[in-house]
Length: 247
Image (cartoon, rainbow, N blue to C red; front, side, top):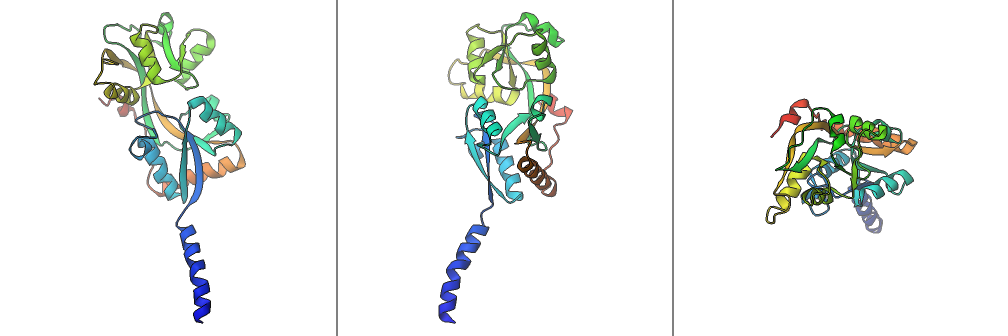
């Protein structure tokens, strides 16, 4: 009996050690503080939420931080099992299953404080040089007008570059999330960078943020498992209209 217990104990330790870890889930993301960022606490507010949902689903989240266009490429080719955070759009839904919301994003236009950006309809922006980050979804209407040739945005590699381009006078404004603008402005508070920029009063959209999984049987199983964890864990999130008015 003594020898049989000695043989069994290591196996029990191995079994329970493995059981303590969930199934790995590898997702791609980008540097988009304060929502996601390698050096941020909990890797960002949305990363923390996604990690909590994964834990509730019995999965261990493994996040890779890459430039956005590479994030999309790796999700499309199966290098990662999905990616986040993404705005819901008809185009993206042709390729990916969208999870329930994991965050909210208020989108508007950043411009120089000493400039009046005069517009009521998106078509009014046709005379302005508007920066957008290459590969980002903006709003359905904005992107539709771009496809129609009504708007001619200037592509930027990042939100930070877009801010620098506004300051340098290379563009008039940039489409940006309000929390991202505030984070970047606060980080630059010790210098003059971004001090002369403002987030415009007109809101383009209030987007929900999602985790996306490829439209494959494996992706369908993952999004269903992820969504079940949101519901069973009481982690559902609503991006209500009053979020738009938050100061």
